[in-house]
Length: 249
Ligand SMILES: NC(=O)c1ccc[n+]([C@@H]2O[C@H](COP(=O)([O-])OP(=O)(O)OC[C@H]3O[C@@H](n4cnc5c(N)ncnc54)[C@H](OP(=O)(O)O)[C@@H]3O)[C@@H](O)[C@H]2O)c1
Picture 1 (tube, rainbow, N blue to C red):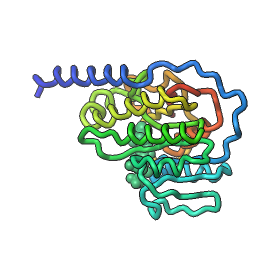
Picture 2: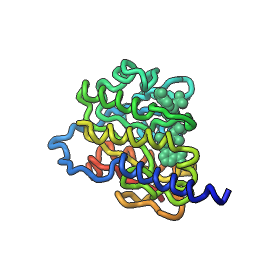
Picture 3: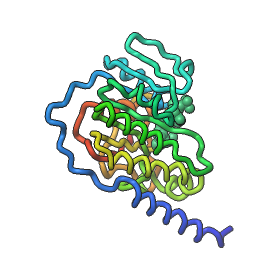
């Protein structure tokens, strides 16, 4: 066992370096849109997930017109006069296009549990979203990825850097780097939000956000409720436009 350890550590470090190279490493210089249209209509992708449910609830509380793209509408379990549910898979370009049409912004909290082999669900789904946004002139995308990628490699703490990502999540994180690269090379106004490890705890309504947050040693965390709040702020705030911003408690 001890003989394997140096090889495993080499693999973990090499993977971190590859995740650093492939994800977004620097913030683009972005000029905020001159006369931004007010944001009223939001599409939420991944609305039946942990962060997505928070996004839907909080967006409705803030008074937005919300569209949720979901595979299984009954699973959402929310009814509201300002909520429209579109049934569809993010891998189906026509379903994505129907959901994206007429929106002011898209918030993406897509995720899945197919960790054990190569997948392209996050990157292909996001490419479909970007294509539809281009086609319908929807400008703003706020997309949740994770600390541990690009310029934030190593910032999810040692347990994730040396165990969770290399052992359980290598394919998943690799697809997140493709997802980030697709967003960064798109023409939309984008913000990539990279949270620490997610909890289902209550919102604290406070967090640290920035391009260099996180920790090399300890796992940093944040609740899905606070991530959703931060993501919703990015729908109309230009502070982190064209960059990947970390967020954690
Ligand atoms: N867990 C952590 O500690 C952690 C840390 C940092 C970042 N993140 C990232 O944060 C993001 C959100 O995580 P979460 O745990 O809040 O979400 P989640 O509970 O995993 O929910 C993922 C959502 O994506 C949807 N989805 C998956 N495949 C789809 C498809 N083909 N078409 C349409 N929708 C699809 C799911 O729909 P169904 O309900 O139909 O499956 C669900 O609504 C993920 O990208 C995750 O990797 C997680």
